[in-house]
Figure (cartoon, rainbow, N blue to C red):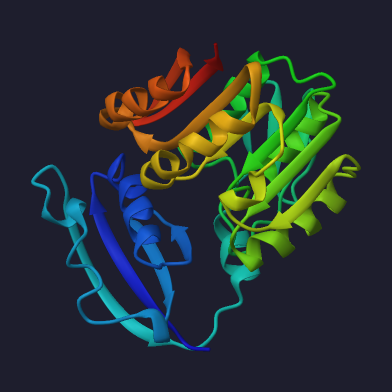
Length: 276
């Protein structure tokens, strides 16, 4: 399978790079490599068309200068590409997120992730903030759902924080397979991984639900999250911008979900809610 590579030159880099990644992901781009001048983005050739960038709002913004070229390339060694650019990170001096070839910094929690083409390395603001929220939530012996689990990073961290019964669900087959690999790397034993969508949640109940997806999916599926969240349960949401908070709040309030905390990072937002 051949891919189309887009080479974006971005000024200023932040927050434009993160916004661009989010918008490209919505139109089918599968993998991203950040560099000193901007971003390389990849999409399968049979998913691409000449007009694919026309709906991207950031390209029409006066706040950023973004130029790009594109070309056809043969299949990339994705592991090699991200290994060149994936640096280990730390969250609040407590959590390290690293690839298998990075040294262990010996923090309280050490997560080993090989993301391949799945979302969730901790570098993106939304994953980073969700980990911050999870540091503050009591997960001991809790039943937890990681919806849109990507690499499985948040489910893995939930088990490290004491959760005993966890489901990790993603609609993408690659994410499903990648999550299983990452669970093995982190010696997880309490996580079940499923390929599916929100219909998986019917007749299930959770103490904590983690959903780091995007605004439209969150809005569409909120009723199901509320239905399977236990009374007094915690819902953690991310994958949207600060300007999306009012519309998320309006929707969650319909289901007795009250916002009790929020985090902001480079215009990305994350919410903590309680089912009252």
